[in-house]
Image (cartoon, rainbow, N blue to C red; front, side, top):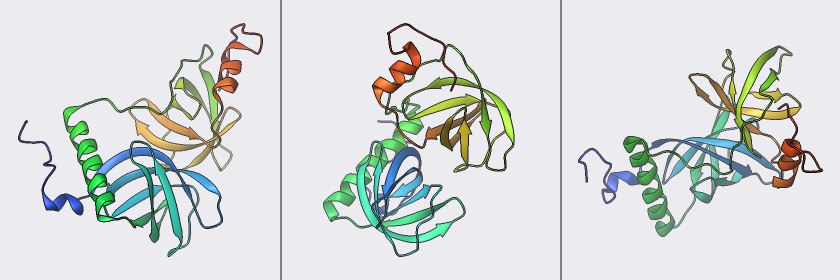
Length: 209
Protein backbone atom coordinates (compact mmCIF):
# COMPACT_ATOMS: atom_id res chain seq x y z
CA UNK A 1 0.00 0.00 0.00
CA UNK A 2 1.39 3.46 -0.84
CA UNK A 3 2.70 5.24 2.24
CA UNK A 4 0.70 8.42 1.57
CA UNK A 5 -2.65 6.72 2.18
CA UNK A 6 -4.40 7.45 5.45
CA UNK A 7 -4.00 4.57 7.94
CA UNK A 8 -7.11 2.68 8.98
CA UNK A 9 -5.93 1.79 12.48
CA UNK A 10 -4.59 5.00 14.01
CA UNK A 11 -6.53 6.46 16.92
CA UNK A 12 -6.30 9.97 15.51
CA UNK A 13 -8.86 9.09 12.83
CA UNK A 14 -11.57 9.34 15.52
CA UNK A 15 -11.24 13.11 15.54
CA UNK A 16 -9.70 13.84 12.15
CA UNK A 17 -12.02 15.74 9.86
CA UNK A 18 -12.24 14.70 6.22
CA UNK A 19 -13.30 17.05 3.44
CA UNK A 20 -16.15 15.35 1.59
CA UNK A 21 -18.83 16.16 -0.95
CA UNK A 22 -21.82 13.96 -0.19
CA UNK A 23 -25.45 14.77 -0.89
CA UNK A 24 -28.18 13.80 1.51
CA UNK A 25 -31.27 14.82 3.40
CA UNK A 26 -31.93 15.70 7.02
CA UNK A 27 -34.99 15.62 9.23
CA UNK A 28 -35.64 17.88 12.21
CA UNK A 29 -37.92 17.51 15.22
CA UNK A 30 -41.00 18.64 13.29
CA UNK A 31 -40.57 15.70 10.90
CA UNK A 32 -40.00 17.66 7.67
CA UNK A 33 -37.11 16.62 5.41
CA UNK A 34 -34.71 18.96 3.61
CA UNK A 35 -31.85 18.38 1.15
CA UNK A 36 -28.29 19.00 2.30
CA UNK A 37 -24.63 18.46 1.45
CA UNK A 38 -21.94 17.27 3.85
CA UNK A 39 -18.73 19.27 3.34
CA UNK A 40 -16.55 17.87 6.11
CA UNK A 41 -16.96 15.13 8.67
CA UNK A 42 -15.33 13.16 11.45
CA UNK A 43 -16.71 10.21 13.42
CA UNK A 44 -17.86 12.76 15.98
CA UNK A 45 -19.40 15.49 13.86
CA UNK A 46 -20.43 16.70 10.42
CA UNK A 47 -20.78 20.12 8.76
CA UNK A 48 -23.75 20.45 6.40
CA UNK A 49 -24.65 23.03 3.77
CA UNK A 50 -28.41 23.57 3.71
CA UNK A 51 -30.99 26.20 2.84
CA UNK A 52 -32.84 25.62 6.11
CA UNK A 53 -31.16 26.61 9.37
CA UNK A 54 -32.22 24.58 12.43
CA UNK A 55 -31.99 25.85 15.99
CA UNK A 56 -28.88 25.20 18.03
CA UNK A 57 -29.55 22.26 20.32
CA UNK A 58 -32.16 20.72 18.00
CA UNK A 59 -32.07 17.01 17.29
CA UNK A 60 -31.35 16.09 13.65
CA UNK A 61 -31.42 12.84 11.69
CA UNK A 62 -29.24 12.88 8.58
CA UNK A 63 -29.07 10.47 5.63
CA UNK A 64 -25.92 10.81 3.52
CA UNK A 65 -24.92 9.05 0.32
CA UNK A 66 -22.26 6.39 0.99
CA UNK A 67 -22.56 6.95 4.75
CA UNK A 68 -26.14 6.14 5.63
CA UNK A 69 -28.11 7.29 8.65
CA UNK A 70 -26.57 9.35 11.42
CA UNK A 71 -28.15 11.43 14.14
CA UNK A 72 -27.12 13.96 16.73
CA UNK A 73 -27.48 17.48 18.06
CA UNK A 74 -27.05 20.76 16.20
CA UNK A 75 -24.10 22.44 17.96
CA UNK A 76 -23.37 25.30 15.57
CA UNK A 77 -25.27 27.33 12.96
CA UNK A 78 -23.32 29.28 10.34
CA UNK A 79 -24.10 31.19 7.18
CA UNK A 80 -25.47 28.62 4.72
CA UNK A 81 -25.46 25.60 7.00
CA UNK A 82 -24.93 24.02 10.39
CA UNK A 83 -22.84 21.47 12.28
CA UNK A 84 -24.09 18.34 14.03
CA UNK A 85 -22.40 16.51 16.89
CA UNK A 86 -22.95 12.86 16.07
CA UNK A 87 -24.47 10.59 18.69
CA UNK A 88 -23.36 7.01 18.06
CA UNK A 89 -22.15 3.85 19.72
CA UNK A 90 -18.46 2.97 19.74
CA UNK A 91 -19.11 0.40 17.01
CA UNK A 92 -20.89 2.97 14.85
CA UNK A 93 -18.03 5.45 15.30
CA UNK A 94 -15.54 2.80 14.21
CA UNK A 95 -17.65 2.17 11.12
CA UNK A 96 -17.79 5.89 10.36
CA UNK A 97 -14.01 6.13 10.78
CA UNK A 98 -13.54 3.35 8.23
CA UNK A 99 -16.00 4.95 5.80
CA UNK A 100 -14.30 8.34 6.09
CA UNK A 101 -10.86 6.81 5.68
CA UNK A 102 -12.04 5.15 2.48
CA UNK A 103 -13.49 8.42 1.18
CA UNK A 104 -10.25 10.27 1.94
CA UNK A 105 -8.10 7.59 0.32
CA UNK A 106 -10.41 7.46 -2.69
CA UNK A 107 -9.83 11.18 -3.23
CA UNK A 108 -6.06 10.72 -2.93
CA UNK A 109 -6.10 7.88 -5.45
CA UNK A 110 -8.40 9.72 -7.85
CA UNK A 111 -11.07 7.01 -7.78
CA UNK A 112 -14.28 8.40 -9.35
CA UNK A 113 -17.16 9.13 -7.01
CA UNK A 114 -20.32 7.08 -7.24
CA UNK A 115 -23.58 8.76 -8.11
CA UNK A 116 -26.95 8.07 -6.60
CA UNK A 117 -28.85 8.09 -9.88
CA UNK A 118 -28.02 7.54 -13.53
CA UNK A 119 -27.43 10.72 -15.46
CA UNK A 120 -28.55 11.49 -19.00
CA UNK A 121 -27.80 14.24 -21.48
CA UNK A 122 -30.88 16.23 -22.56
CA UNK A 123 -31.29 16.81 -26.28
CA UNK A 124 -32.13 20.44 -25.60
CA UNK A 125 -29.39 21.74 -23.34
CA UNK A 126 -30.19 25.47 -23.33
CA UNK A 127 -31.98 26.68 -20.21
CA UNK A 128 -31.79 29.48 -17.65
CA UNK A 129 -31.21 29.89 -13.92
CA UNK A 130 -33.06 32.40 -11.76
CA UNK A 131 -31.43 33.62 -8.54
CA UNK A 132 -33.30 34.65 -5.36
CA UNK A 133 -32.90 38.35 -6.22
CA UNK A 134 -34.66 37.84 -9.55
CA UNK A 135 -31.60 37.95 -11.79
CA UNK A 136 -31.71 35.39 -14.61
CA UNK A 137 -28.75 33.89 -16.46
CA UNK A 138 -28.62 31.63 -19.53
CA UNK A 139 -27.00 28.24 -19.00
CA UNK A 140 -26.53 24.83 -20.56
CA UNK A 141 -27.48 21.54 -18.93
CA UNK A 142 -24.49 19.22 -19.23
CA UNK A 143 -26.32 16.23 -17.77
CA UNK A 144 -29.14 15.55 -15.34
CA UNK A 145 -30.71 12.84 -13.21
CA UNK A 146 -33.88 12.51 -11.17
CA UNK A 147 -32.12 14.27 -8.28
CA UNK A 148 -29.94 16.97 -9.84
CA UNK A 149 -28.04 18.41 -12.77
CA UNK A 150 -24.63 19.70 -13.84
CA UNK A 151 -24.88 23.18 -15.36
CA UNK A 152 -22.48 25.11 -17.59
CA UNK A 153 -22.79 28.76 -16.56
CA UNK A 154 -20.57 31.82 -16.20
CA UNK A 155 -21.74 32.89 -12.72
CA UNK A 156 -21.06 30.98 -9.50
CA UNK A 157 -23.86 31.41 -6.94
CA UNK A 158 -22.72 30.58 -3.41
CA UNK A 159 -23.08 27.01 -2.19
CA UNK A 160 -26.51 26.51 -0.70
CA UNK A 161 -28.15 29.22 -2.83
CA UNK A 162 -31.71 28.35 -3.84
CA UNK A 163 -32.22 28.77 -7.58
CA UNK A 164 -34.79 27.90 -10.21
CA UNK A 165 -33.45 25.90 -13.15
CA UNK A 166 -36.01 26.28 -15.90
CA UNK A 167 -39.13 25.37 -13.91
CA UNK A 168 -37.39 23.26 -11.26
CA UNK A 169 -36.49 24.52 -7.81
CA UNK A 170 -32.97 23.51 -6.88
CA UNK A 171 -30.02 24.36 -4.68
CA UNK A 172 -26.36 24.93 -5.60
CA UNK A 173 -24.31 22.02 -4.24
CA UNK A 174 -20.94 22.23 -5.95
CA UNK A 175 -18.72 24.45 -8.13
CA UNK A 176 -16.50 23.11 -10.92
CA UNK A 177 -14.48 24.86 -13.66
CA UNK A 178 -17.31 24.94 -16.22
CA UNK A 179 -20.15 25.79 -13.86
CA UNK A 180 -22.18 24.40 -10.97
CA UNK A 181 -24.01 21.29 -9.83
CA UNK A 182 -27.50 21.62 -8.37
CA UNK A 183 -29.75 19.31 -6.40
CA UNK A 184 -33.47 19.43 -7.15
CA UNK A 185 -35.74 20.33 -4.24
CA UNK A 186 -38.05 17.45 -5.15
CA UNK A 187 -36.71 14.16 -6.44
CA UNK A 188 -38.59 12.97 -9.50
CA UNK A 189 -39.58 9.38 -10.12
CA UNK A 190 -37.87 7.33 -12.81
CA UNK A 191 -41.14 7.30 -14.73
CA UNK A 192 -41.50 11.08 -14.55
CA UNK A 193 -37.98 11.55 -15.86
CA UNK A 194 -38.56 8.98 -18.63
CA UNK A 195 -41.73 10.78 -19.71
CA UNK A 196 -39.92 14.11 -19.79
CA UNK A 197 -37.23 12.55 -21.95
CA UNK A 198 -39.32 10.32 -24.17
CA UNK A 199 -42.89 11.59 -23.91
CA UNK A 200 -45.82 9.58 -22.43
CA UNK A 201 -46.27 7.61 -25.65
CA UNK A 202 -42.61 6.51 -25.75
CA UNK A 203 -41.69 8.92 -28.57
CA UNK A 204 -38.50 10.80 -27.78
CA UNK A 205 -38.88 14.53 -27.49
CA UNK A 206 -36.54 17.38 -26.70
CA UNK A 207 -36.68 18.60 -23.12
CA UNK A 208 -35.75 21.80 -21.37
CA UNK A 209 -34.50 21.68 -17.82
